Amino acid sequence: MFRNWDFERGVLAVMLVLILAGVGFIFWQRSVANALQSRLGAAEARLTKIGELAQQVLDLQAEKADDVVASGKVGPFAYLDQQMTASRIGKKFNTQPPQTDAHQNQGYQDDNYTLIVAQADYDFDRRTVANFLLYLEGNTTRMKVTQLTLDLSSRRGADRDSWKPRIRVTDRHPLASAP
Image (tube, rainbow, N blue to C red):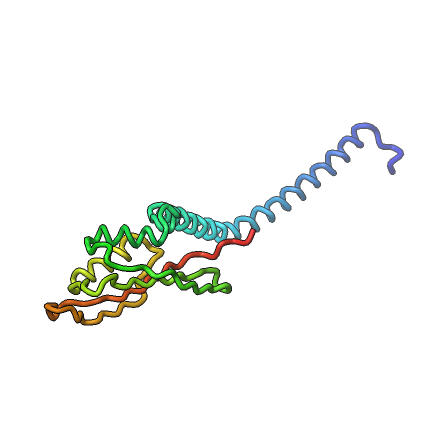
C-alpha cells in the first residue's frame, strides 16, 4: 500500500497527523482552561483575604510606630514618668521594679509595675486618679492598668474624697526571639 505513495500523499498524511495532533492539543487546552476557570473563584476569595490581612498588618505597623512604648522609643519607666507629668498628678509615686511573668507557650511576657504613693502626705481625689489612669492607658496599647486599690487617706485634714492609690500596670510584650 505504501509502495505507490508519492510525495503529495506523504505530505497529506503528515498534514493529517498534524491536524489530529492540533485538534487533540486544543481539546486538552480547553480542559485545562476549564479546570483553571472553575478554581478562579476560590483564588479570588483567597486574594481578597490576603489583601485584608496585608492591610491589617500595615495598620498594626502604623499603630506600633505611633506607640512610643511598643516602638521602643521610650522605656516603661520613662513612659510612667511622662504620664505622671502629662496628667498633672506629679511625680508622687514610687515605681517598684517589675515582676516578670513569662508565658513561653503563648510567646509573650508580662512585666508588672506597682506604683505606690511616695510620701504619707500625698493623696488624690478620684477625678485626679481617674485622669492619671486614662493617661496611662490612652497613650499606648502595650501598657494596661490591671489592678487599682484605693485606700482612704489617713492624712490629717483629708476630706472624704482623698485617696491613696496603689496601681499595678502591666506591660505585655512579645518574648525576645532566641538568636
